[in-house]
Length: 361
Figure 1 (cartoon, rainbow, N blue to C red):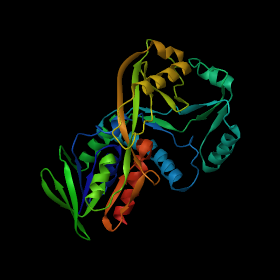
Figure 2: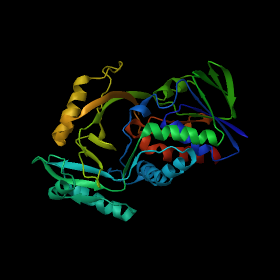
Figure 3: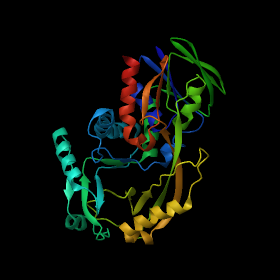
Figure 4: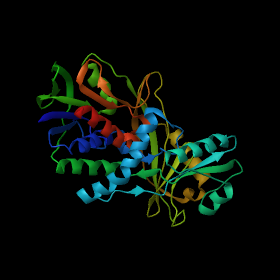
């Protein structure tokens, strides 16, 4: 059997673990210093913006398309295997367009998506208002783009279901284990120095988000991944906001309103970069601005109760495109799947498939 270690159990690490668990010839162990979804995954909104994005070719679109296709079967499979109900909004994404938006670019994208087998629609303001009476469509809103095949999923519940399903298939999870360093003993075996001793594996997958940089540095290779903070809110409204038969994710000016059912909503998210390379402290003013923009879009949110506020650090590669899914240079048995920035949940299934192909080739 091939011994495989995965360092990191966010959505990416858990997805890889479950994907690899399908192959009995692989003996998979997942290591993490904390329980799952304690990092960036636990702060994500789970908005799967694939079709509605302007990536139309190359690796970036291929990853998005693969993941969207995977999710349609992955969610029911995980629910059947684990007994968990995974909140999965299949009502699509509605993106409002403000004055100055070049709708001709969207018309071209609609045609491109049709040729690729995906739906995308341009709605006029009247149709937006008819389907979404809870929105305040000020004169600056000129149209909307509706993507019925994009999705939203609860990242925490999804990750826990992936862990459960992987366990059922024989994956070993070791939480509370901190990795101090890595050593490649020879071309086929690598050693992991941990708080519970030294462990040896035939293949190693680094999926540790922001922790990936320190791990690669222990091999004298720095994969530069830096933090970008995001904040969000969980709200409960005294009354339902949308029509009972149509509850898509609403997005405008990079603010998302995510319906959760039972009059609850997520609102986010900020994008906050470190200043002069220092640590990022959550900026309360920025979160207030996001909330104010959400209320301007949906005035009834002003009456909602804030259940909680949360934040998380997203791993963003420096000087190279996100995400990083590759073999570590000079270390053929060490792979890295990290630096997904704002698209970890969206790209997790495709990342897992890519890693699986690299392992089994």
